[in-house]
Image (spheres, rainbow, N blue to C red):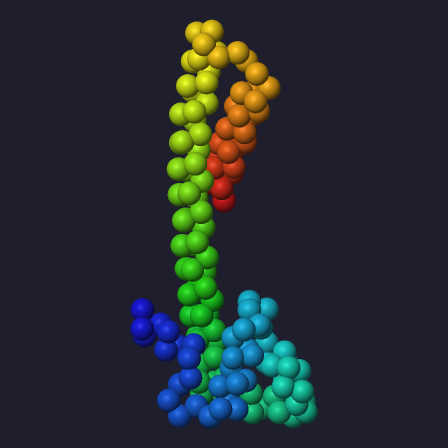
Length: 135
């Protein structure tokens, strides 16, 4: 969403110094603080007042929270794509395992170590899928 993006990019009228300080604050992550910005800027302790003014004027907390939400959305999209891939692989693999079990039962295929390894692999994949759905 374009309006969301604007929340963590430079505000109109925001100076380069203020925006630079904000990007430090934004990029620190959930454990961010004005003191960490001060330290990163290698500024004197009294500069904290300027940082606090910028933070109020340019709504740093709201913008940083919006940025965190944006990153979380990206992570969730990636996780969902990975889960979909894992589900497709498990489905494909389960068909193969099922066919092998049928063939072993019917005496068409001997119960070789490779077949047993394939079946064990299948159950590991199923376990990973279950584990990922719980979180």
